[in-house]
Image 1 (cartoon, one colour):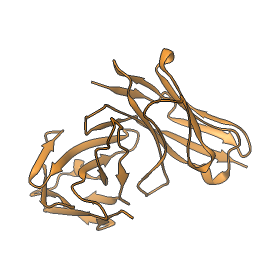
Image 2 (cartoon, each protein chain N blue to C red):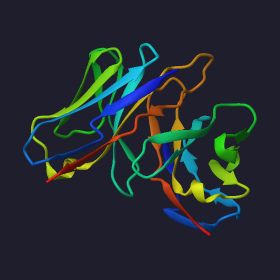
Image 3 (cartoon, helix red, strand yellow):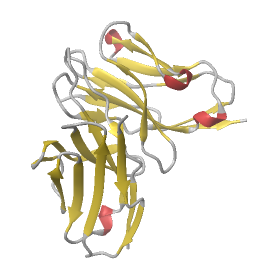
Length: 113
Length: 116
C-alpha cells in the first residue's frame, strides 16, 4: 500500500522568505501526487497535482512542486511567502485506477512579519 | 461548475445521541464520494467511500455508518455517539479520469462535531 510522510509538523518563515515543505512517498510504481492547503476551519483546496510528464509542476497561488523519483519526494516550494499563506498543507498520494488517496499528517505553516 | 455542500457546519451532541451529517454534490454525475475525519496532528482519516448508489466501503471499524441514497448524496450516521467521535468531518468527491489520469478530490467545507 502507498504511504506518504511529511516530516515537518510545524514550520515558521518570515514574510517574503522562500518556503519548502517536504513530502516523501512510498509506492512501487509512479504515483499520482497532490498538495492541498487548508485554512483553519475550512475544507481542503488543491494547490497542484502531478500525474506524469514534466516533473516540475506549477500550481495556484504561486506554488510549485518537483517530483523526484530517485528521492521519492514531491516537495512544495514558493519563492516568496505572503502572510495569507499561513495554513496547513497536506501532501497526498494516489494510485492509478484506485479510488482512494492517502494523505500525510500535514505541515502547519506560520508566517511572521 | 461543481459544488459540494455539507451541513450542519457545527454540531454539539451529547454522548449516546444519534448523528446524521449530510453531504451533497452539484454539477457532476456518478461521483466517487468520501467521508474523512480529521483530528489534530493526525491528518485525514478515510472513514468511508462510495463509487455508486448503495455501494459503501468502510475503511475503519467503528460505530459510524454511511449511506448513499442518491447519486450525489452521502450521509454519515451513528446510532450512539462516543466522546471519541468528536472531530472535523470532511466530505469529498472525485470522478475517475480518462487516459490514465488520476483524480484530485474536491472537499466540502466540513462539519465540526463536538461530543460532550
